[in-house]
Length: 79
Image (cartoon, rainbow, N blue to C red):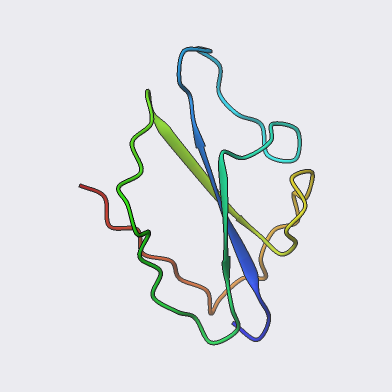
């Protein structure tokens, strides 16, 4: 992309509720700089329950702007 975008991750945990983009604060936000990058977390991310993710244009937890169509691709490797 031509600007930084933000990968936001949530884990359901014991709440039994689905997160709402722009309302539920993410568990982790990872900035992806313009031009992309490989991000490897130094330790495994171990959280309870299902994981949800979204990508937005702004870092704020309340941001729910969508990316423009075309050009952006994110690959998550989960083990």
